[in-house]
Amino acid sequence: MRDAVSRIVDAVAETAPEVRAGLTGRREYETDENPSGEQMLAADLHADQLLEERLLAIDGVASYASEEREDVVESGQGDFHVACDPLDGSSNLKSNNVMGTIVAVYDEPIPAPGSALVASGYVLYGPITTFVLAREGTVTESVVEETDDGVERRVVDEDVTIPDDPVVYGFGGRVPDWHEDFEAFVREIEDELKLRYGGAMIGDVSQVIEYGGIFAYPSLTSAENGKLRLQFEGNPIAHIVECAGGRSSDGEQSLLEVEPDELHQRVPVHVGNTELIERLEAALA
Ligand code: P6P
Image (spheres, rainbow, N blue to C red):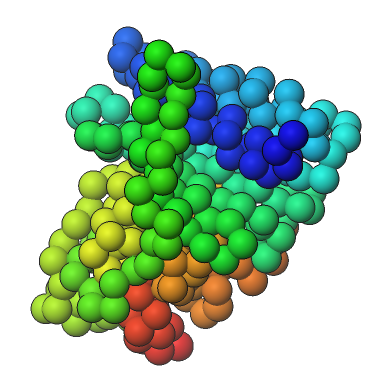
């Protein structure tokens, strides 16, 4: 039998076509908000329910946490703790743009530091459904397809590596809410790179991994810790980008070193080419 982490990855990949198929007809907002105070689409809840059911059924998964749920769901036994953003960028559904599913597999109870990640991945619902996975220091990309024999995951890149020469950038938050030092850094980057910002972190980070560059949802004057959540977005994306040869930062240190203190804590997220992250940290020092 495949090891537990492989079965977790298999479950997420096998659920992806069902999440994608479920997008149609689930574009309306729910009445409840998620623990971060954000509106949820029916599609968010559908993806969350599928993933919880499939992942907690795996022997070895001790708990499941999601951006859409107040608390961690315990199964009572196992070595691995799975955190998901079931549908990252779901607000893009109404405008029919890309979004993704993020999965983080920790070997410590959640909330956990990124250094406890044993695997991180994202499914990108783009023109093609792909699955990017970081595990044991390497990043692979697979195409996920539903066939007559079930869901097929075909590796198309065995060693995903960020190109040395950066090309694109994407920065979240409103310009008037950026801190002055961050804005000064942006003005430099604007003269060097091309803007690629689509409102779903997974789509924007995918551009950075493919072409080289930097993505950030920074600290804002209106929200000191930015918008993105450490457990469900910051840690897994940092793990993937660092395994692909890049760097991450909360403005001072790798996101993987950030000490967690609560499940839905937010963190400023900056990921991309090492040289750009180092320039950013110098600009914010
Ligand atoms: P804004 C999507 O809601 C998300 O959590 C990330 O995927 C994305 O990077 C960010 O929020 C977009 O936020 O403020 O640009 O709408």
